[in-house]
Length: 199
Length: 112
Image (cartoon, rainbow over all chains, first blue to last red; front, side):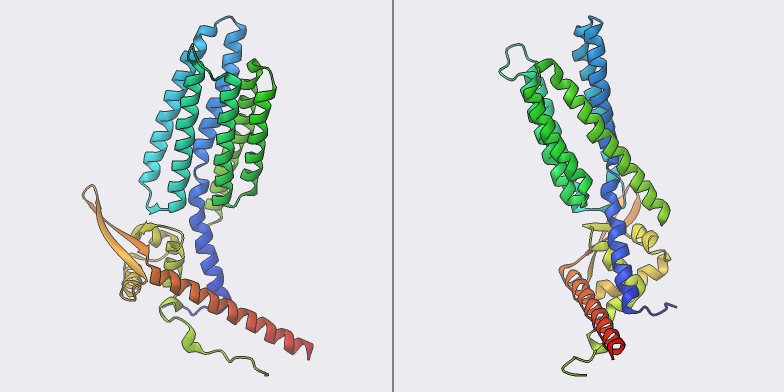
């Protein structure tokens, strides 16, 4: 037997149900953590390899990281696809970041070719700009101001890549990957778990 | 009471006056589609209870049903129809108007 609800209770119920279903986007903190960890750790190890005179290992390292990351993200996507609810915003999210990833990897490969017209600094600046677009759209989808701030910082990072000497451009992107990918990802995961506990 | 319009209970959508039906429609408002068991878990109701409410929503044309199979297991997916979306928006507007009317009436009484 259902008890009758007054108008305020009904409004509260509508708001609660709509907010609950928003948590789906917050679960995508995992790809952010994966990208951020791969980008920052990969950059740090690359500099260490360069300093140790083992620069020939840098490209294989990134290939291994890219394959591991793609595998992890595909597995994550498959697990998400098994979920019991489908949202348009989640699809937009996935497609957006997939497109950015394809663009970024393509540009990175182009910049690594022997006779390339794209310098490492320019390619990292363009990749940063695309990531900024991803964050800006994500900020609108999730209504999180934090992601909007991250978008602005990625744009600034992209500009910085054009201004610093080429060998330091990866350091800029690696730092941003840690600060603006890894940490926001951890924050998203923590928020999703926190809202899960509240229920 | 000057030109203030009296509240007419007939304006409230009977279909959405149930807690479970309102919760189900609100949940579906932010999804393309959702599985029966997900709605059940979110609303904290039982299979039989939710099935009855979903049938009412379906009969009213507020939700659409799609049957599928996950392996050998039958799965029921629900989605909100355009009619259901309009009904939820209309219902929320009515509630908001009712609440703001109530707040104004309280304020008027307080001012007197």
